[in-house]
Length: 215
Image (cartoon, rainbow, N blue to C red; front, side):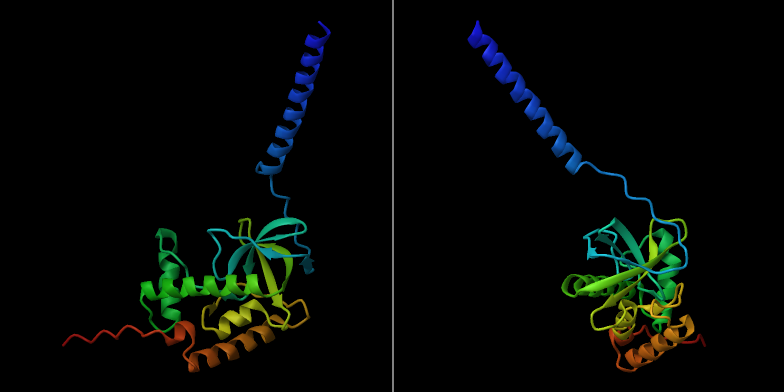
């Protein structure tokens, strides 16, 4: 009788510990709600220990990171990289992006979008960077505008412009170092002019032949 009770007690404790372990594993792996995005107050804050997160929606100017406060999807100020895939909602934007670079085909424009995605992800994986944001939302999405600075002092938006992988086209901002929006955009225009002259990125793609006038 005593042995039966002892076995029952051990089995009960084993069941309890198994349940505790299962609950801990469930809590660790379950999808937890994202922390609420703070309201913008006009001041830049630094997202500490920012790291790139692999995500199917990442592209050249918009990507997910993890930081000490959780996860966040960022959208760069000032620049717009071409789309990396074609679907109904972006057809008009793709045409505008193709035209911006002097008349690329849609497949060429999509290839530039993929190059921009690779460019951004490579640098965010291989170089240390700092993210600063004012928690300004991109329309009503989960994304927030941000500035990404590398240890060489250069902004990711500037690197993309120099590589010829984006157009200067979206919301701007006063920079965290106090540089005025107009002045920073003027610098980007200078970088773009240099990239175009050097035929970098999209600027070096062969353009479609102009249509001949009908006779």
